[in-house]
Image (cartoon, rainbow over all chains, first blue to last red; front, side, top):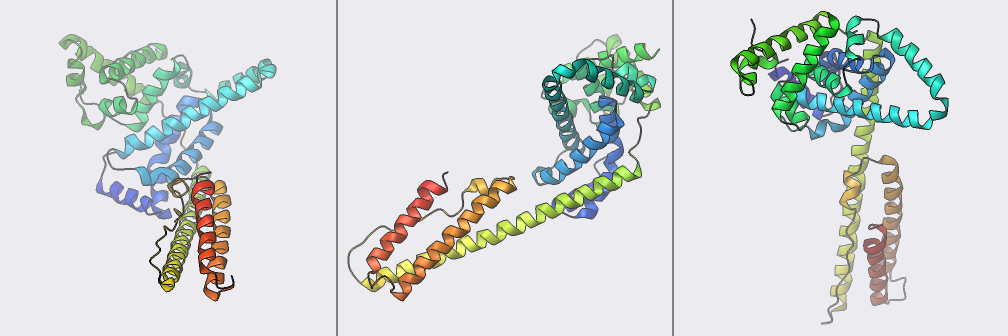
Length: 174
Length: 175
């Protein structure tokens, strides 16, 4: 979405703590952010939780937004929310290692339920970083330059990873 | 063939900086086809119940933010007022003594920046509660000084105040 005057006004309202402005922001971005979380986790339940977390984080952090691409800024927070979730999941896995077999079986069943479409199955065959990068690119609609800045990596690296990832995804889908 | 990606960026030109003409053409086409697959396989949308829940969560978070801001403003005002009163009373008492003896009066920095910048409400509450207690104690001392309840020994009372202020500065606020 182009960063219009309307979006600027909505963001300014959010910075003043206006609930209606936040509500508008949810209407604009919830679909894309939900898609981003869903394609990365493969679970609707987890995506529900992460979407709520993202917008509460947004309330806390909106005062620190200093202009520039709001898209990029929002999806950077979304990416951090996803990484926090991954860390938490890994921690839980370590803690419950004794129940490994049981958990893996439950997790596998749940993933199978949620990865109903072919794209989700193909995405899970990509490595986590490539999958996240492709989803970040697609759902944030940010330019390669913005994404490279978000990930603090050279633009050539970003281009190359997205190119290889999408090419592999296409082959997996054929 | 479309060479423009999202945000109107020219992918062919972008790839051209890293690859030769043929390769950049091919890479642009790969990106375009890959993103078309993503377009064709839309992810589920959040349902209206979830959106309502998210908006309710935002309202709760905003309430917390507002009450937090109000409380901080209140304590800040109270703190500034208390320091002004204490400083004024000490100045009056010192000038009343009319001596050439000059002493340094200790002052306490009121609330450290860490509390204003902190987002940890539970810890802030505990610290600000202690802070209010300290202010009340100081106000009591100032009142005693004004009423001469210390037997007319203003110098001793000022010393006591200094000790309390030094404690606040040196021990309490620095943790």
